[in-house]
Image 1 (spheres, rainbow, N blue to C red):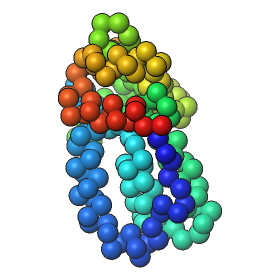
Image 2 (cartoon, rainbow, N blue to C red):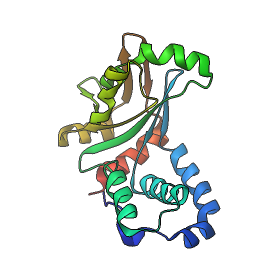
Image 3 (cartoon, helix red, strand yellow):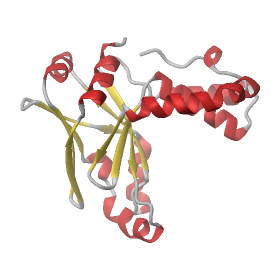
Image 4 (tube, rainbow, N blue to C red):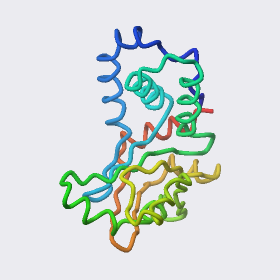
Length: 195
């Protein structure tokens, strides 16, 4: 899948003119790229469009105008765009109540090491988390956002297209499994077919 380039990025003025439209467009796209796993975890699968939007929003929030700052954001967020035979996602722990969040996050340390994809009855693939996720063990509480990837073999990609696919979180304090809905699976197949 192609990466975001500097020339793809709109300056602050140009982005502001199209921002409302882009927010609606990305919200529609993310709806087809989001799955709930249990009552506290949501996965959003990333692609060029979701990453482009995130970069634009960061530039807007930080009022960035320097080329090197913008390039840093591009380089950082481009890591979320999946490579060939890969699916990339952001895992969100969603606990709206602050007291409950403070109570629950220490129990969820290591959740990023407990995410699996089951493709039919033949393949199980464990998700790989970005290195920063291991800071959970140092802080004693799970981060609410983790950047993760599933690396698939060509055989697993082919099976993904034909078989039922389920996402499982198998952590000592959080166990949940859900089937990837057809509309999300369609999007992910498109991702896997894009070089």
